[in-house]
Amino acid sequence: MFKPKLIDTLKYYGKEQFFKDLIAGTIVGIVALPLAIAFAIASGVSPEKGIFTAIIAGLIISALGGSRVQIGGPTGAFIVVVYGIVQQFGINGLIIATFMAGVLLIVMGVTKLGNAIKYVPYPLITGFTTGIALIIFSSEVKDFLGLHMGSVPADFISKWLAFGQHISSVNPYAAGIGVVTLGLVLLWPRVTHRVPGSLIAILVTTFAVSFFHLPVETIGSRFGAIPSSLPRPVIPGVSFATIQQLIRPAITIALLGSIESLLSAVVADGMTGGNHRSNTELIAQGLANICSSLFGGIPATGAIARTATNVKNGGRTPVAGIVHALTLLIIMLFVGKWAALIPMPTLAGILVVVAWNMSELESFKSVLKGSKSDAVVLVTTFALTVLVDLTVAIEIGMILAAFLFMRKMMQASSVQQADVLPGELFNQDDMPKGLDVFEINGPLFFGAAYKFKDAMKVIENPARVLIIRMRNVPVIDATGIRVLREVHATTKNNGTKLVLAEVASGQVMDELKKARLLFQIGKGNVKDTFENALKRANSILEAG
Image (tube, rainbow, N blue to C red; front, side, top):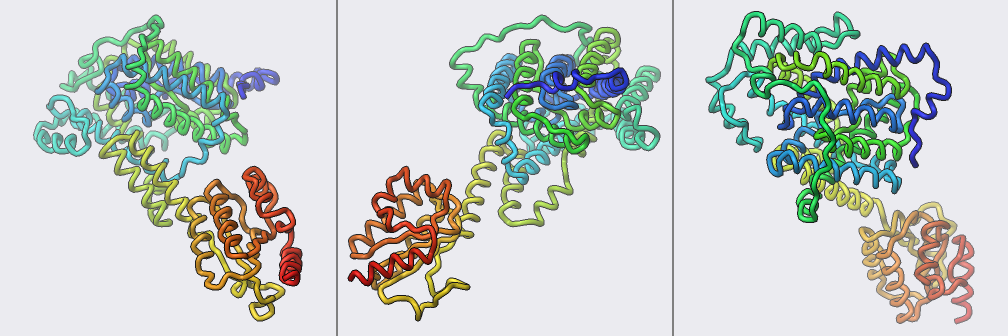
């Protein structure tokens, strides 16, 4: 349940791999710095909180996690959630919600729910991920263009209406810095992958703004100096009323964090041929979020882009992730004060690229072209994420996906009479008089059980024996048991003997035994093969 990968890797750890991890961790630490600052600012908190989160949570996730190469920290997926919590409950509310989410993640890991996360429908994940990307892009328009306006409205439509009203106040210098940032981030990889384009963009634009004294807002002019040390941990005061208010945001953080971290771990497994431990990863993510909140940080999870950067640069053990956190700590201690000179349009440009990479437009189009039910889940989740709230989007998306899945299962199930059964040893003319045969195909659950019940009603003249074949019933639930019991009661009242044939062993047989339905029908009337069921029917008919 909890066995960090670090323990396994250190058993056979050598000097050669250490140098590879050292290089990879250092590069990822440099990449993570501007992202941590940008994610924090976009989330509505001060920039240093992103750095604190990347250092503390990143260290814990690597040291205690269930993946060899996972890099943890703040991510773009949390921007929407964190911004909403800060606007409604303030910084203290965010700290408490993050702490609660950490506890929930630990509970999920301890109860071994790590494997259950993989059953979240792909259209739902694509829908809210693309929706988050659109919201991130929308949130950066003001800083990217340097618009002279007040606070940006939280509502998506109101936000774009406000942009339209203030479009004439575009700062050409800010827009120019933003465009240069986009160009450098997108084109620099053609030069080299060793040095991240985001770092080059920050160095070039910061130098240009400082040297030429361009009238562009910077981190320092908006937030002041960035601290060069970690704060003291503070335990947040929590009351029952506060827990009631913040339980939904905390669940959203925990669910989003678990999905994001395990998706990242799966991607990493594909790149390295490894195999992560999902429950260990969830527990580590929980501990990381608890510790992050104690230091005033924001929610953290596995970061797919930084994890991929780690792997591509040779990182193969959790040591690389630990080095990444220590690199960020060193930068904050000795170079952090210079981060205040970074232009806001530069961070906006970096986040625009992040939003584009998150958007998964090709996946979005692919799902749209697929089945109608998947497209409905996708569009609904996307629309609710953008126009309403991420929590509502996940809740409604899951409920909608579940209902559509049940509808598919109900459509897949069927009840057939003997004369339409293919490839059997008999046909309707050869069947003994006084015998009816029905076959159930598909799961006999609450969505399909009444289809079977309705099929039984079409029998105008009840036969003396009714055989129900269940060879293609893989699972049955309480509603299916109830319907079978009702059919048995009806046939008994009509003087018809019920015989069950080819009941699948396992779940179906166990449920019939637990419900004592086998006892009511009679063990002699439950046969393992259809031939034996026919023999039993003939004996009943002959007995008269």
